[in-house]
Picture (cartoon, rainbow, N blue to C red):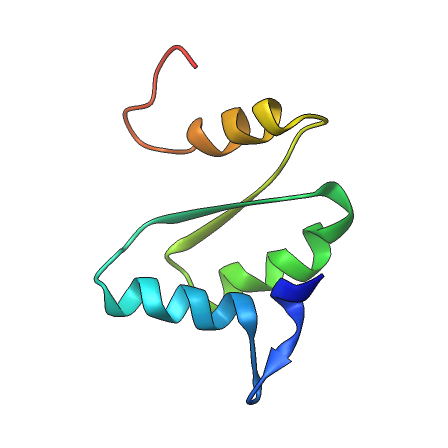
Length: 76
């Protein structure tokens, strides 16, 4: 997948996360397909302010999985 491709020595997703950090975003939830969990788990090591969660069988289930990690999210 393109988010794991290297661009100038850095993965595309790491570029995106660096931009978010530069914008002072301090809490990011990344939802990934089950088959990409191994690659994505390393994001938490490189970016301690990022949480990775496995998505569901549908887009709705994936969004729900991500939103449930957000503080204050209820009844989702």
